[in-house]
Amino acid sequence: MKKAYLLLENGKRFEGVAIGATEGAIGELVFTTGVCGYIETLTDPAYYGQIVMQTFPLIGNYGMIPSDVQGKCALAGYVVRDICDEPSNFRAETPLEEFLRANGIPGIAGIDTRALTQIIREEGVMRAKICYDEKETADSLKAFKIEDAVQAVTTDHIYKVGEENAAYKVTLVDYGTQKYVIDALTERGCAVTVVPANTSADEIMGTKPDGILLSNGPGNPADCAQYVAEIGRLFGQVPMLGIGLGHQLMALARGGRTVALKYGHRGSNQPVRDLTGTRTYMSEQNHGYAVVAESVLDGRERLKNLNDGTCEGIDYPKAKAFSVQVYPTYARTANNTSFVFDRFVKMVKEKGYAD
Image (cartoon, rainbow, N blue to C red; front, side, top):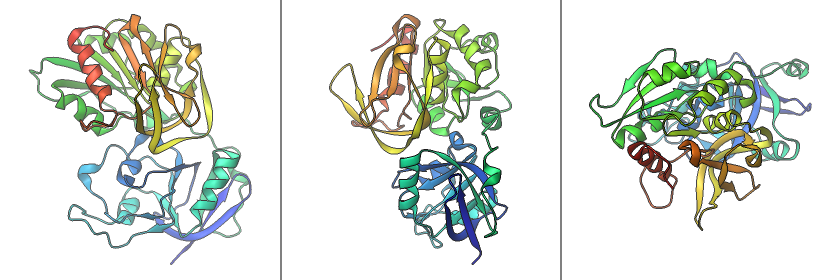
């Protein structure tokens, strides 16, 4: 088996075994704490430009299931403790490593992911590279920066999903959306028109939407000034929901600011408190930036992360809009965040703000 090396910006080096594609990679090293859901992680466009490490030790045990794929595979690289070569699941069609090779994603297995996680938690997210020469150095990492992230993952054309005669029409601005977001809307009786990220406010309103959804996506929200300007023109026209990056861009459009988190929130076990009541939700998240709630004009913080106190959701009652940093879960069960979609569709139906 071919040796591989993970080099960190701080000079540390890990030796392991090469998996997936073998051309090497440079990216921003992050970790995700999900025990399952590696298919969704691998196909979340919000990981564009990042080398993703799974903290759970065994990955690939249920193979790759095409119907669970959520979007473009945009990772720069993949890091695991152990990879399963022989998956056991009646829905599996290919092993994980075959998927990595097919999508050009280099990876490394057999390293101490616990030690690597501790480094990131103590020192913060850092640049890293996967390479195959033991003499390779980390010098080339200093110049690396994730650029044009949204443009790399957004759709390049307008398309429609759902029944044409649906009672309600939602226009989804694709900054790097996932399939489940569209499924959640169509399952609730909406026809969805998906438009590229650089679509103007006039063009968006030209689709005659009953509601607008600003999707999740990758990158630093501060690099998205052109999208922020168009969102500002949309405020108050029809009910609007922002998810993930869409939440951050919505806040910037209302004069707010965002800050980089030390190591981000990535995984399916982030506790979030609803400040309007007593409920706490265990949520799925993937972001490295947070909105400073008090900086947002006419915004009222609604959701708060119980680990670090950062903002996870904002209401805009005057503008018939709200946003969430969390990834709303799709299924309608009692203890998850699918209420986000229910609330948005209710706003669309009533053409106004809904608690």
